[in-house]
Image (cartoon, rainbow, N blue to C red):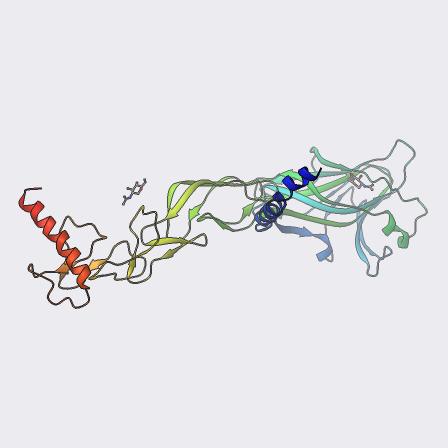
Length: 348
Ligand SMILES: *[C@@H]1O[C@H](CO)[C@@H](O)[C@H](O)[C@H]1NC(C)=O
Ligand SMILES: *[C@@H]1O[C@H](CO)[C@@H](O)[C@H](O)[C@H]1NC(C)=O
């Protein structure tokens, strides 16, 4: 046992670190919710009841401090439907609903479900059409026929994030149907999840509705694409894994997951694995984010010189006029230059 502990002990800090790191990764870009409809924010819904007036809307204090907006179908035990107004889809691919409802007792085995229907439609429909049911809601705590308004709150079923399925047209309409004795709905909220703007690994993607399918991203400023960027916003509204790659372009270096322009007097060539480098002697840059350094006026490089070599004075016989170059540097440059001149003469 002691041995077991001794072996395991050093691993704990690492495990905790990994856990924090993992958690950080996932909470950095949590799903956002975009609300499309909220009955609690409206004074009147004005939805269409069929038959007329079988569904009604009233304000009632249901054991709450303030009166709540209540939709009810409590009359004849017939099929009665309630059709919402048309609502724009926005960026939604999948709709979610939060609902608060209560149902009255029925004889055993006869409890009806509150059916929910969804019409995915470009233009508004004016009457309920037979359509499949996307949800059947049933609560287990039914209120008795003798219930008083102040007691209703203890029978309310609050169901969150129920999936209404996918939508693809310009808009949609929601509908309820009920055949039981009495049902109350005190709150309806429709929304969708969204992946937020994300910028990671030099790739950025704009916010988009959950369940988007593959999307194309772009490299951040200063970065260039190595392979095409593709990422998917999952149905939960979180970003899936990144495909493709960006790298910092010439004149830029990687810093804190961004590409930073090399400062004046520094440069970085394309495909260089190192960061920005100081310009060689007698050269300068004309702007930030430079790929190479150009010779100062009066100095030059041989056509064969690579950009990481310094420039030398045009006077062939020495370094007159170049006060800044150290004697050590001068001699090394001189050797390089002499070597090149020899190569030229030898016909290389
Ligand atoms: C509330 O309603 C949902 C949806 O129909 C149902 O799944 C759940 O069991 C209900 N909860 C209770 C406590 O009745
Ligand atoms: C950098 O690398 C890419 C991919 O390997 C290549 O296409 C490009 O020509 C290179 N650029 C330079 C300046 O060498």
